[in-house]
Image (cartoon, rainbow, N blue to C red; front, top):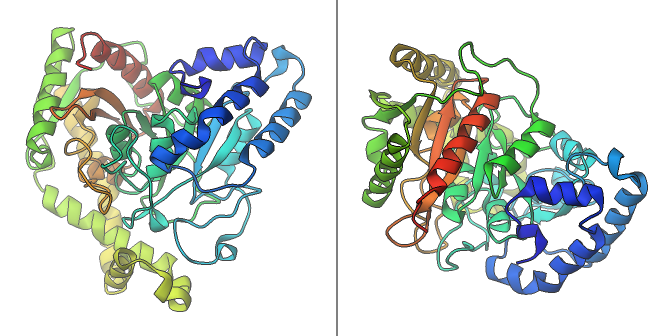
Length: 439
């Protein structure tokens, strides 16, 4: 594998900053295998002369930071960017057939921050149409007959295939955590509002989160250091302590399929055997209403976002998106206001349950099971839905393989604002699961 696929991103970046790993040579090594590897996953938007551009940008980066000691934290990191983010020098299509001029505007500040930290944009990654359900061409890097998930399909697959170090995505229901699970990588969704969403084509602004992918939790944490807005942690959630975890038993957990549930229970048992306290905690007993509320918000807000575009370009929209928008047009404003109020109510409810049980974080499956066969569907995001609705920070981490031999992940959700301790807890849990984890 090319250097871009190295799993220890901190070591790779340290070598790039010191000059031990030559940035020009790294790009050349990736270029030599890129066409063959990208053809298997179709994770990136086509770009002529991609590597000529990358070499120009690498030379500019080296000229700007000639002294190793002055080089920024992400110096030379190869970055994929979901094609709903505006990036200077690239068209934005949002996975759609609408004219790119429709979406022109300033670069997303999240992209600008990573570029200032030294990241080089490998390219735009494939998105489902408008970050909803109409899939693009991307294949799962572990099995090309299966979906990589959605809507951040290209970003997850690009990291899973070792084409880039990190990649940006978005999550409105489960569009980071689910594809991370399917592709065997780490997916981070921070607390709602911790990363600005300016410069991004929205789906549902009341639920949209910026997220990202990396091969390991430590790599995802390096990105977090550049992106997260300052926010306080909850009292009693220090990074260095081992968390007491809660399993949300009830109708939510029952949505996992048989293989997913069995694998999740096995992962919890491995953690218990290593000294983790994990409590079974009845939660979200009204899950059907939580799900219905979420889907109403998505539909109503998408209809509002697309009101003018849809009126002009309806024939260019995919059937899945047309159905969503037309359903959203029928939702009364009063209903949307009630549903939006339900987000904070769910957040309070989940925090109160953790408080009452003396727990610090929730543990649950990252997806119902492994990536399903076929490319017509991106899979079901239901296991991610409540944590997104409540705006809680989540980390999806690889947790071995399901019975079919495909990746399957574990999802950790902390209290709102507990992004920093969540990373520390997830790194420790990642190490624990890797010991004796079936491969």
